[in-house]
Length: 239
Image (tube, rainbow, N blue to C red):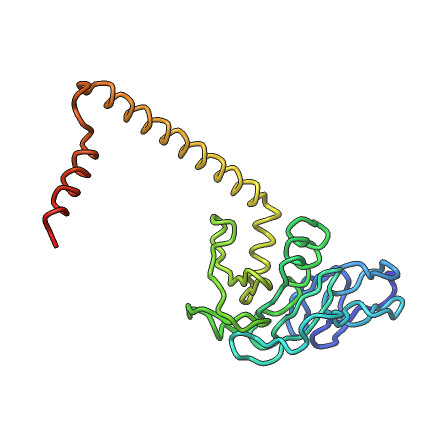
């Protein structure tokens, strides 16, 4: 297998399997195993140089008419290492349906494939960088919500509650790296701590309210009740 020449998927120039960048077009290179023979191939190659099998195939099913929410045009359907995604060749954005995104967040093998592809794909031009606006879902065309993934990742993604998640150029890589670094566990721990603190404060407020009530004379009405009585009294004479 090692004797087989690998070629850059961007320009076609010969390159060693261990190369990290093409010597001719400077595209970044990364290798993954062929799903058929397990020989090394560059991410982005359409066929394996060892056995000739297709390594990147159009994804089956899905909305074939989905279009880039930035207006670049139709999204290309791709299946990469068991991850079915739709990508825009113009701005570099990626669309994932909700079940696929959940599987990606929990499967390290799929994460490795996505990161390898990101490393091998030249950065898209920053045509949409710096523009903050709500985007339409590629599936239903309704405006998506902008959310900070896991609240602490710092990656603001566009989410349609029903259909999926849109990642602008390089955002999917950043989210996957956040997940692999234990970011979801950190987010869950912070959520747990915040909930525990809220319960502690609530308990303190209830204790203070009970102490204030115990200090009143039996015939004293609570201030809130007095306010309610006054409001009722006034309303009787205002038409």
